[in-house]
Image (cartoon, rainbow, N blue to C red; front, side, top):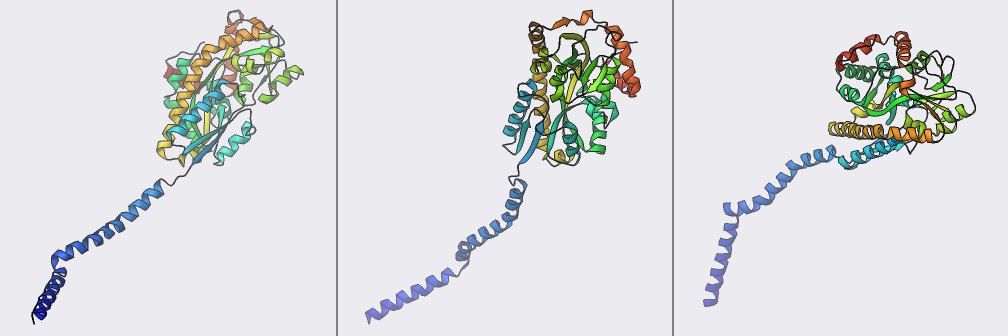
Length: 364
């Protein structure tokens, strides 16, 4: 009998516990996992969205130029590529190809217009084929020094030309902070004035301002590929070429030419360009990094090259070239004759616009 009472108490207690389990307090404990599940369900789309935003996509630019691996610009491009890779966590990669490994410049520019992920070191002369005004930046005796180039990095006039280039031809200017310095004539025929250089065949690039510019100095411009320059002089296809000192020394022009004629006829800046479609496909942050690091590497190498230019000239003189310094050249006559290039290519207004921004007067 006593046993039965104990069992009855135990059963009653069990029923009470079961009822309590169905009360509000028990519901709160059971609801927690459901709330957690709902929170996960609500968070899932955001997590997926974040993954889609940073999906691990890697952007790649195949960047080429005509210079050798020994050229300081090539080393600067490698530095640019390394900085961009590091600052984008490997998401934007630049492969650098020297010595025209990507092909002929004109063909690469055409690929660029089609939206291919290629870039190139070109110049204002080539860009002048698309937007004529660019050509003035490589017209004879237009620019004089590095400070002028730095001023033009923020030029409203040049920004207008860049926009036209992008809108009409799908070519984006990344930077023009790469300066090779003055170009001079290296020849097997001597001359100190346009009259004395009349008919002397000088290799230059094929764009209109190069040809018109060299012709305006009294010479006869002959277009040859960069890689054919040495052999062209050696085999007497041309009498010489015109280059900055560092590029001429790297190509060993002193082995095939006798005279350095220090005309300083062009202060050469270069343009880094790519497809505008490809550039605009990049995240905005990557675009900024690409441009800023390109400018930074360009200014650094340009300032170093300015210091190294004299040493390269001396190497060529020590190799046996006869040096005719700037002071012994009839520079006034060269400047006067060079006006023909501005007239021929309708670049007088472009020069006036640039000079106004530089606070510079056109020499009469």
